[in-house]
Length: 227
Image (cartoon, rainbow, N blue to C red; front, side, top):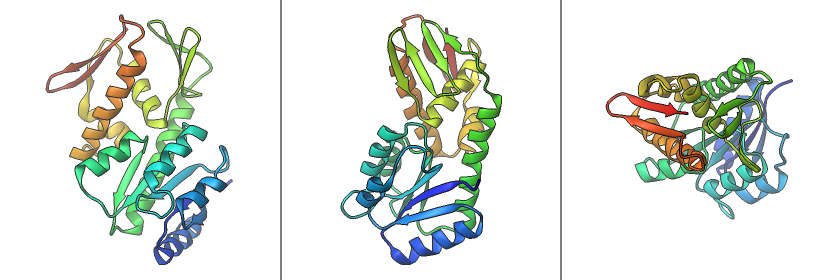
C-alpha cells in the first residue's frame, strides 16, 4: 500500500504542485488549504506522515502539529516554512516535528527528507521485538513508542522513541553526539543539533521520576544514559 501524506499548504499553486509531484512518486497525498480543515479531516491511522506549512489561516502549522500529536503521538511531521530564524525552527521541533524545510526548496530535497523519515521508522520497526526494555524503574516499549513508570504511561513521538532507543543501545556508555545526529536527523548541522538538545531535555523530564536514571552530558562528545 502506498504511504499516505497529509499536506497542509495555503498556497494553492505550491500545494497543487507538491501534491501532483508526490502522487507521481507513489505517495497518496491529500491537500488541505487551511490548518483547521486539515485537523477536521485528520484521524489517527488515516495518514502516515504530515507536511505542514507554518503560516496558514484559521490554524497555523504549529497549532495543527500540537493537535495532530494529541491524536497520533507517533506520526512523523515535516514543517514547510518561509521562516529561517533559529527560534522559529526550534519552536517547530518543540511541537514534535521530525524535520523542517525552508522555502524556496527543491522538490527532490523534500522527497529525500520524506524517504529518510520512512527509512528510519521502517528500520526501527524491523529492529524491534516483543520484549520490553527496562530503564531503571521504567518500561520502554519501543514498538509502541510508550514509556511506562508504575501506572503512568507516556506516549513518545517517533524521534523521542528513536533517540531513547539509541541511548538505551549505548546505556552506561558514551553515545557520540554526531553519531546520534546522523543516525536520526541524517544531517549534523547546527539546527538539528539544537533540536536534539530539545529532545534530550524532554527525555530527561520523562525519566526524572526515577532518580537512578540519568542522561549525562559528556562535554565535547555526547551523552550517557545511566540506568
